[in-house]
Image (cartoon, rainbow, N blue to C red; front, side, top):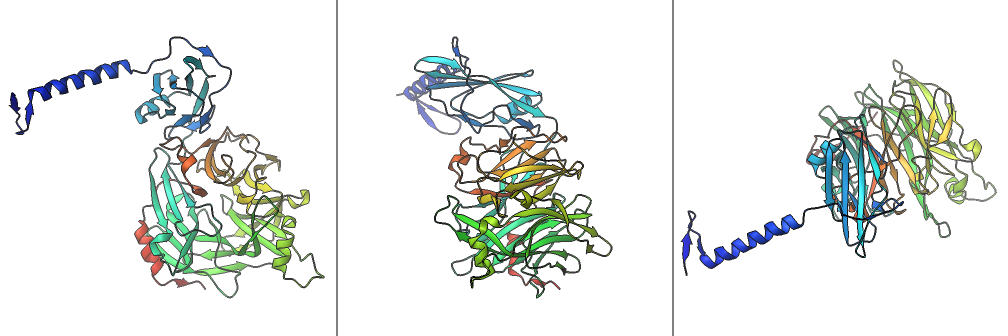
Length: 508
């Protein structure tokens, strides 16, 4: 047997070389034969392909990651063709995953034509083509969200993560497990930023090492906001757009469970107020009202002159019974109705004006919550359902839009579904909105993004793209509080963990 000695002193026999040669030829032939082609003949269908995520005729920003999708139609072979004025791209298989370079070239056009061909029982069919429209309006490069298991009590592995929208990169901001053990656990929630700035972030730590973590341009602090004049520590936050001030609601919140209602859990505020926290002075200014009012979910106007929030007026109904007001609210949970208010704010004196009604939802036997103002100050988006304040659990919850110039309010039917639509955030340029929805399966909240034309109308929303098309079908976590950011949080999780272990600063 002839042996050949190579430069790297690896001996290869001649028969081995022959076998390698045949393998190479076979692979070349296989590659040539396997080149993706449009079928020579096919029938036309009037039905759109059944794809997941449902990306037919959506509008996307020019700087979004590739839209990958899975073809759910039955078939043995699949070919998908993308066409723009820049060229054509073909993909085979039921997982359609455009490459990054190809996707970047596709997005230079105003719209992308997508054609799906399916081979079933030896016969090819071209499904009804659809478009993906590309907007010139860019989206903020990052979002952040809380990932939580769909349990009412399990939160040991809860994390706050950030995702780069131009690709699929996800990284940890902070996770419960960094400072948790079998004895002492934590719960983290309510991350928020000042004017989309990732260097100015706050989030809460509950239970072990409890407090509010505030990062401001590199300075980290853990604050204990519990005082003798507030209902609780700060809970739901909103940063003043320019000043070192954060407004909070202070809440005593509880869960109740139902045996007959299909919506098994109801989260209620038993008591809540508003307060203002001064970051420099470490001072708390309570805005306490009559305990029959429940004030929650504050949000600043973009000019910082008004604080919007939702409020319910509730007095004990079963006065003849010797029960607490808290239990009375549990019994009559569908009678707790929130409307939208605002209070003026004077920066020099840090004083708030009297409550002003913005939208009287309770008058129509509805409940409105989560007011969010567009960056131009004109549009107010909120969530509305039949009752209560935590609409993430309510299947009837929809997103509504109010024109603050005309006072007109409408259901945003073009983006709502027959399941939960809840938490929502405006992009920094006001051209995009991200919101939470359970339209996929009714159990898990997923982030959806929609384009806003500035005149009161939205495009069909699209689900947050993932590298693996069916990722969200297998991912057993909910996305909570999706927020836009102008960049990534650069403070490492270990830095947050170390700060949480240090002594807290007591607010005055």
